[in-house]
Image (cartoon, rainbow, N blue to C red; front, side, top):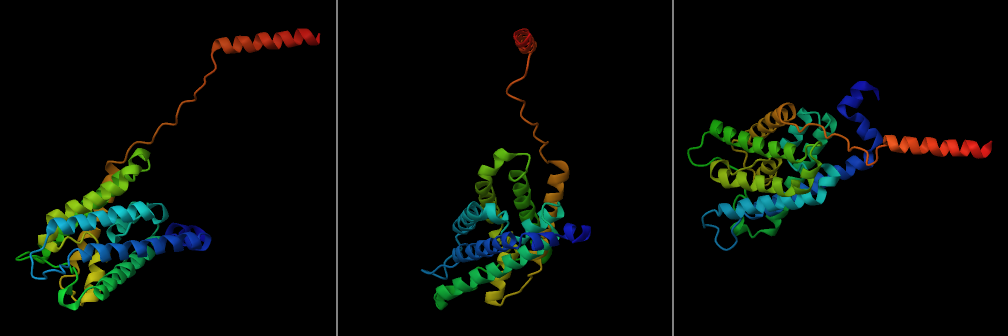
Length: 270
C-alpha cells in the first residue's frame, strides 16, 4: 500500500472494508434521522402560517443528535456532520479517505431524510421543509460568521468530550453534544436557520430546490469546525493519563522472608 496510501487511509479500505461499510451506513442513517425528525419539527401541520417555535426546533434537533450519537457512536464515531468530520480530519483524528466517504454518506442520508419528510407531509403544509435561509436583513457575511461559531462550539465540545485522555467524559458525550446543538439553535434559528451542519442544509436544499446563499452553510460550519479542532488539539488537550500504580510492591521484609525460605530449602537438600 505504501506510506502515502496509509496516510490517506487507503489501508482502511483494503483491510477493513466491512468495518468502514458499517460506519458509512451508520452515518447515512444518522443524517436520515436528523433531517426527518429535525426538519420535521420545522413543519407545522396544524397551521402552516403560525410563527416558528424556536424552542421546539432546538429541542428536536438536539434530541435527534443525542439519540443518534448514543446509537451509532461506537460504529462510526457519530459524526453525522461534515463540519465535525472536517474538524477531526484536520486534527489527524480521521484519515482523508474516510473523511471524504463520511461526507458523501452524510449528504446522501440527509437528502434521503428530507425526501422521506416530503413524502410523508401533506403538500399544503410542506412549505420549504426546513430549508435553512438567512433571516431578515442578515447579510451573507453575517450568516457566515454565525455559522462559523455554530461549527466552532459544536466541534470544540466534540473534541472535549471525546478527548482520548478523558475516558470519563465519553459516557456523557451524546448528551453534551445534543445539548450543544440545542444551544446553537436557540441562538441562530432567526439568523440563519441554524444549520451547524452542511449535510443537513444540503438535504433540505436538494429536495426543496432552494440553493440561496448555500455556500454559507458549507463554508461557515466547516471553517469553524477546523478552527475549533486545531485550537483544542494544540492548546487544550488533556494530559496523558499516568498508568495505574501496581497494587502490590515488594518491601524489604518480603525479600528477607524469601531469603529465609530459600535458606531453609537449601538446608533440607543438604
